[in-house]
Structure formats: structure tokens, C-alpha cells
Length: 325
Image (cartoon, rainbow, N blue to C red; front, side, top):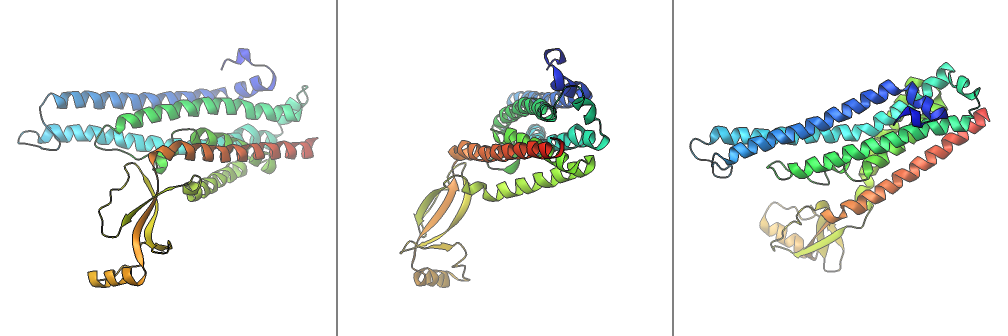
């Protein structure tokens, strides 16, 4: 974003925090380069391994070292994706802390905001710039990083160290959810900065708010979209759905009542069979989210985050009007 194409408060925001923006941009590019570079290195190792004629599944004499080297490269790439996912999950908290602290809290704490308001810039316009600039940059940056992570994970799933779409660090790093969290915490950080007017306090409250939000949505995520249910006869073979996320399982009685999976945990086969008879159990059930539910879950959760973000922004402007007219 060129400062020459901006005017008024937005340009001031970019100029004030240009070093931070350049630093964050450089770190993001370094992260992308690391992921791509590691993938290229792993591809080179894989190509060399293919030329040896060795196999991971049927290792023969003389193939031990090539197999270990090949699997080590895949494991390193897998661990890198895990760390990248964790960083992606921390980004919204860092964005919220930056807005709550250096961008808003510090100006209110030091009184430098008065200079802007004395130069034909209304408080509402000042806050709008403080929100709009990081919102645009965060949305663009997080979207790019999320796309790179999704691409890298697709490459990683072709290795011996695969990840599942419902793993927290995976689910929280792809799709629309990362952008939703980023915008939500940006709005919450602004609200915290306006209410507390103290840099450190606002940053601390933002981190607490992010932790509470993540815990709450992780708790209710499986209920954001209807699950599928498979049933099977007691004692029959059952294949777990490939890529499915288990959300609950147990027993069904002849009357359709659900019982927990441990209701008939007996010590002997005879006791187990007697329990099934006594409880009138006829079927097993499994509730799960198939892989096709990834996008519905993502969109519903993103919608919740955007509603919370809009509410926080509205409340922030209301706080600003009450205090400064």
C-alpha cells in the first residue's frame, strides 16, 4: 500500500507504523519462503530416493539409510506445517494486541490523539482510519498466508505424515476462519484500547478475550452444522468414514434411545452380552462430520466472528461518542 495513494488519517496511520508494517511483511515473506524452500528440498530428497529403487514399506538390505533420510525430510516438512499452523492461530491475537496497544491505547494514554483532532479530523474519522488500515492489511495478509498454508498442507498430505482437516491447527489456518478471527480481534482490540486507555492493560485484555473466544468456539464447533449418523448392527464390521471427524458414538436401543458407549463395559463377554440384552441394545451409532462439512462449518463460524466484530466496532464508536462527542 503506497502512502502516496492515501490521504488524511489513513496516510498518517501508515506513516506512524510503517516500520512495524515493513517488519511484519518481511516476516510473512520469510515464512512463505521457508515453507516453499522446505517443500522444494523435500521434493529433491524424494526424487533422489525414487532413483535408489528402495521402498519404505518393504525395506531391504542397503536401503536403511536412504529410507531414514527420506522419512526424515517428510517429518521435517510435517513439523514445519504444525508450527506454521500454530503461528497462524496466534496471528489474530497479535493483530488485536497491536491495535489495542500501540495503535489506540498508546495514543490515548499519551494524549497524542489530540493533535489529530485539532487538524480537522473528527474523532469518528480518526477511529475509522485506525480500523480501516489494519483491517485491509490484515485481511490481505492473512488470506495470502492461509492460501499458502492450504497449498503446503495439500503437498504434505502426499507424504507419510498426513494431517486431518479437523485438527485445530489445521482447521484454524485454512478457509475463511483465519480472516474472521483477525477482523474480530482487530475490532475487540480497538474496543479494549478505547475503554481502558492504557497500552499494556488493553493488550492483556485482548489476549484474554482471544483465548476465551477460541475456547468457546472450539467447544461449540461440532454443533454449528448438523452431523451425519451411521448405524451398524452389534457385532458387525464397521468402517470408520475416511476423513470424518468423530463427534460422538454409543448404542441405540430398540426404542431408539441413545446410550453412552461405556454403558456395557463389562469384564467378560458373557456380562457384556447380558448387558446388551438388558438394555435392549440393537445398534451402534456414530455421529461425525465428513470432510465435506469443512466449508459449512467454516462459513458459519466466520459469520459468528463477523457479527461479533461488527458489534465490537459499533460499541467502540459509541464509547468514542460518549467520551469525546
